[in-house]
Length: 476
Image (cartoon, rainbow, N blue to C red):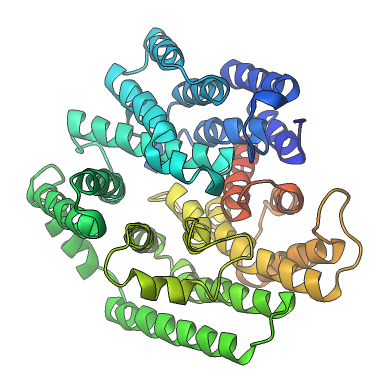
């Protein structure tokens, strides 16, 4: 194991916000990457990138409305959590959990959110699902899922302990709804252990919906979250148009892709990619109109519902719930050659949705400006447009490859040019020209060399780096 290109990019991001906890974590991760390669499992990838990304993100977004609630988003807590995960990567021991909790308390962080964060992260990394499907996850993916789950659990703990009075209603509703995804997974495991088997996800969904309904009818959020949400919908412009537009686009898009896959029967790499990248185009068609009309918060809530639905469907498939065979038949036509539907989790559709959604979630309830809009659009630009053009042009016209990568120079050029053209047409860049193009160029380099899922890595790195650059330019 050595320092990879994605690790160098993470260290470059660190130079924009060099605090001593982040520098200490970077030193520790670099030492492990350079000296302990024989002890690391397969598919570990860029250790420094995986360990630093979460703390760098929370450090850059520390003043964001979505992360305002208490110490759940404190960069020191995330540094300790990443150090704990790094230790567990080498030796599984509760000593790291105890030490991290003690250091969090010594740093003056709130005890209960810190304990919840660290315990949930360790529990996720040791849970049966990650062990059973370890071959489906890189270390960076494990870090993403475990720290996201830990953050949601700690954030919800903070909200229930202190109340949601100081929270923005959209953030509170989003947080509790996202936490319901964790509760659904927990209930599924419990019902499965009680021999419910194929019906475990259905029972878990019913129990989770009941809990959310009880919270929604309580008065923790204004006069009740359900009534707040109905009032929020009633104030939206063109709501009925959206309610018809999305189903029609989705049905027409999936039907068109299905017809395309039947017409392109020849198993060639180019034709396979045309079908797969058609879903990226569909994502742009679904999400871009709301960003263009300034309805980013509603889009964030809608994307969260879609993400929870994707997770629930995949859980139903692996638990062999009713109709799982029909799911397998449909998904098998669009799978990557590296995925085996009989043994693997099918995460590609979920990662596409997350890649488009994460930048929107990070800017939830943020005051709109040029930098915020660029980050909100980054998922669609990088994953929906850039990645698709890079793959198609690289396969069709690419010849010269990057050293040590299967990506081509033509593909990278298509990545950069497509994003530049779309940004020039749809988004203003007043005062953000060089930060945007520098960040896009580094994201292109990450796309070439990343060893983890680019649908997750690219938008998270882009948002973190561009936010860090913005913090160094107060006038922007």
